[in-house]
Length: 347
Image 1 (cartoon, rainbow, N blue to C red):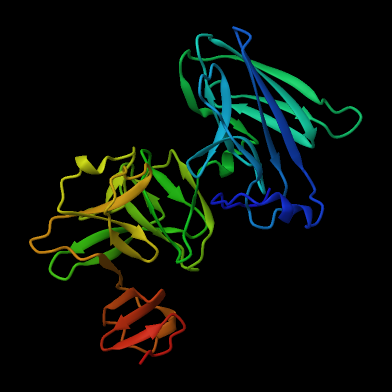
Image 2 (image 1 turned 30 degrees about the vertical axis):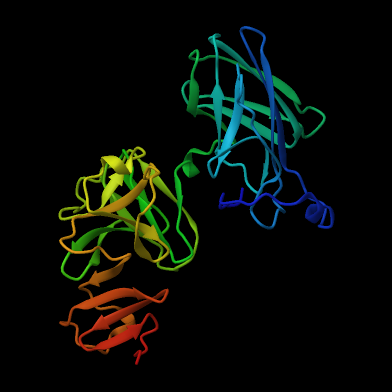
């Protein structure tokens, strides 16, 4: 399966009608039945040829008066029908009412589909392909009553790609986790050292491992939007996060509970003053600032490096290098000279 950025806009049917015929790889009809014989049907599909990495034919889930429901969440919206470019590790949210028993009736309209129960470790596979293929099967399990169950049921579960994060168009992302993590693919984490005199934030490299409950900025040196994977259950105790002024919102953090004169969150390639009232989202980092004077609307992020880069090898190695972001570009200042990442002097 290909990587997918699930920041999607629903496609218009007319646009699809004029496009090429799609090759549906996996389409699952999911019918839930609880112990009271209440039922609910959802439908999810994968179309690798969707060019905008988005969903098509999406239907928002109606949860009013719900007894049993199964849906997936995309950009804060609950969908009972959704077609995606890639369905790997699609999380299902299940709502229950009075019954403790739950039955998933799985129908593979195309290809092979899998349902994974993370609580029990069970995987149910249904195969449409071939004469011997099993088109419909049922998975039975026990659930909590009157509950919204998240993080238990997944379509097309892949443990190796289960944990992932996507950098923005500038290569940045803020991050926090309740577990020690290790980032893969060259993605690195940076702690923040805030200077209240200049209202600048020094980004100091932590590395690829980050301890639990630590807020950091992640940076993809390719300076592009890209999805990276990370592992949990690692030992990140050796990572130096002392002096870090970022705070990690492991769970959603109400801004009213943050004691600060100003709160700054990542926006593009800088930290912007937060003026909203919604919670800081879970899994993100923020910078609380106590300002003796009026806090500016934005804070400049500056990369600090002590090692000489290959691109500026003609500059004296004993001079400290400072990497900084300006107008969407990464520059390196060493002494009185400023270089781009190709080693060219910037006037």
